[in-house]
Image (cartoon, rainbow, N blue to C red; front, side, top):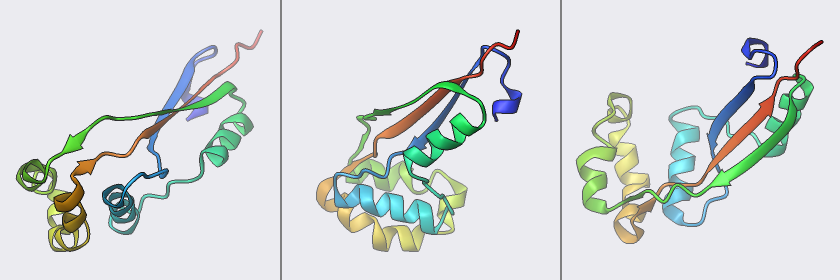
Length: 121
């Protein structure tokens, strides 16, 4: 990605944080890994790769999403609106639904990684 950024440009990348606070978030991350094949490398690893790509002022900021799904909203949209997830509906309902029903579903924080490509004179 750093190769595509203009000189003095900024590269930004967003990843879900795996620093979960409750069982519903833990189950969501687990399903992202198992079903979606998401990797979730450690923030320090991403920052290292960004520095190795020549980016400067590399940083990560964790932002709380403050997005909540009630159990009713979860059933109406979060699972069925995405055709990809429809294929895994049975597993989602078995593994994620009980914790959403009990606790609600707070979407995990996100990590925003950024770095600047230096100007070459």
